[in-house]
Picture (cartoon, rainbow, N blue to C red):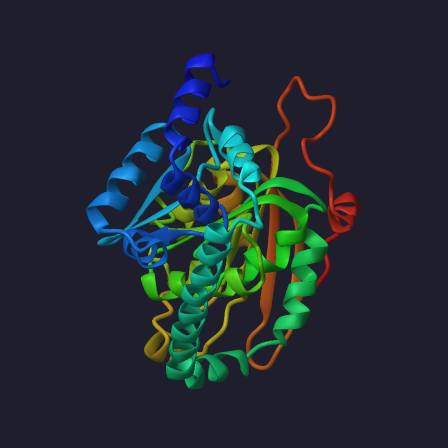
Amino acid sequence: MRTLDDTMSGMRAAAEPTRLRILALCADGDLTVSELVRILGQSQPRISRHLKVLTAAGLLARVPEGSWVFHRLAQDGPQTDLAARLVDLAPLNDEVLARDRQRLVQIKRERAEEAARYFRDNARQWDRLRSLHVDDAVVEKAILDLAPEHMERHLDLGTGTGRILELLAGRTDLGQGVDLSREMLAVARANLDSAGLSHCQVRQADITQLPFPAESFDLVTLHQVLHYLDDPARAIEAAAAMLRPGGTLLIVDFAPHEEESLRRDHRHRRLGFSDTEAEAWCRAAGLTPRAIRHLSGEPLTVTLWSAVRAPAATDAAPVLAKSAAGRALERTA
């Protein structure tokens, strides 16, 4: 809950032209100090001082990523709504703010070009992997069938290109993705920028050591992540800890297979998972398995497993609206 002191502190912090410009820019995406220097045309020490004031006031969030630090409009904490209201007060037709937006568009264009280069460099191996399983569109339809119809907060672990955030963006108020790879995070940011999804964000983090409070999300997704891990059970345990009562965990991965080339050429640690194995991990993490989908391909079968955390004892009904698949508790093979 925001106090009067919080309100006054936030308003004082924003009551300076450059800081209001920074708030308006960070409302439209994650930005580094160097990017803000380019847009605002001021020195790095000066921009850093402004960022320090805005962060101390709770209007901005500071998101470290390796040797880089991104800044974004606050999404958690008592100042979240104040930060959004201050941005809403900034006049869109102001000449200075319009110029800032033009420069921001250029930076986003450069990000997109860098992401495209990364894709070109890796396209051959990704095309080879996609050719081994059912079309992505079929998998995405199954994800939409099993995901809640609406949620406040969605967390995508091992977000990669940000595709699952993008797929479910229309169903969530806030989407957050984490990944260890800076290259993939750059791709995800470019994709989310291009789609205009300012309510979806990504940050660098280990999926077993997440920088979020427990019980913060209505849906957690693990899309084609577990086969890279030495300890998939630990990742599921960490994911389950993020779920609110009534929340859903949705796992997408391969059924057991014998494609040793994936271990050799694509760094897969595990050659798929059985239903028994996946459901046992979910139960051990305190979740109740709900639905399973098998999507047969040649030679790989993609499997989706969903599990739920029990609603709070005082709840009259689950926090989330169930999906059609969830209502039927269907299990299809």
